Length: 89
Image 1 (cartoon, rainbow, N blue to C red):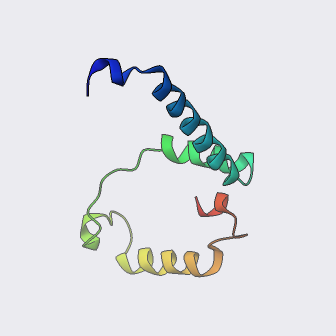
Image 2 (cartoon, rainbow, N blue to C red):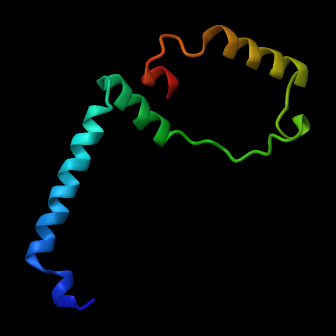
Image 3 (cartoon, one colour):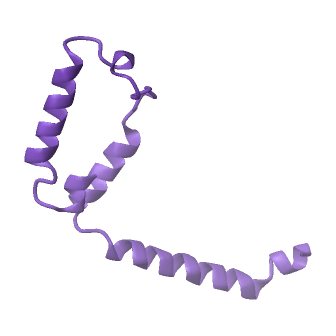
């Protein structure tokens, strides 16, 4: 592909329309402002890379049994609270 074809005015118009239609599609999937805030918070939160294959790699205090028991209890009782994508994020 030549430089002239790369910067052709006709193709630039097509790219702009694709970006606009993509933005409209993204807007259709948003339920609320809270969902956007949760997504921003998720992206800005640091998650350390830990090996969860063995409990001795991540259990520092207490027992591994309580880690697993409390985790499964939380998931069973509270996830997702209202079923919105904000809660799932």
